[in-house]
Image (tube, rainbow, N blue to C red; front, top):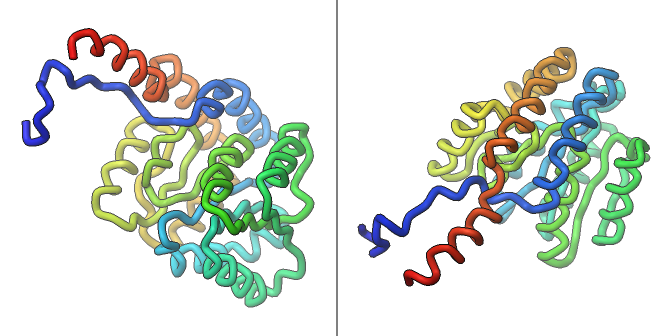
Amino acid sequence: QKMGVPADQIRLAGHWCPQQLVDNIDTDCATRQARAKGHKPLRLLIPVGGAGAQRKFVTQFVEALKDDIQSGAVQLLLNAGDHGHMQEAFVETFKRMGLKQWDTVSSIEGVHDFCDRCRAGEEPRSAVTLFAFDDYFPAVATTDLLARVADVLCSKPSELAFYPVPKLNIRRVGDHEASSALRASELGDGTLEVREPEEAVDWVRLMRRTPALLDTMNAKIVANAKQGVYDGCKEAVRLALELAPAA
């Protein structure tokens, strides 16, 4: 009423997700389940959105994973986006960790090549891969592309909390994001909000030593997809066309 939208024109569409993620849910979830059962390194995608407001939390989280990275238990896909200060913060963190090698991808072609190799069954060349760009578009597109080859998406509960990928929801930036993590937990495809880096590390190690946890999250994603939970984009277009004659 406050926005002037008639009640009879309001519909529930579903989660707003990229088509390539939704179309490949069965295949990607099966791949993740096989990786977990095969005790493959846990591949974490950590994107930094907005203006890089998560800098302190994320760099502390990464640094606390030093032993897990060096032992080969964990792989990191870090998307610094087009935030130069975040790229610098990550590199400084690597140096403090004593990390001797990491790969950097700075083009969308490089991102596609990286994803193609992962889908072909190859592991990343380094335990840590940093994605950093000069432009906005590849920075945003990279998270969507990498989500298909990640085992877990570690992000503040923004719009990414609605993606069909197992999620470790880390500390929110805005209070409105709290309910997004709750929604993921209710659906079984993500955790509740994790407020401290040390707690996030505990979750990573739990996921690593308890394959059933990620197996369940992936199974829930497949089940949710059958109910149309992630079809918000497609459903929104259908509803728009349906309501158009009445407008």
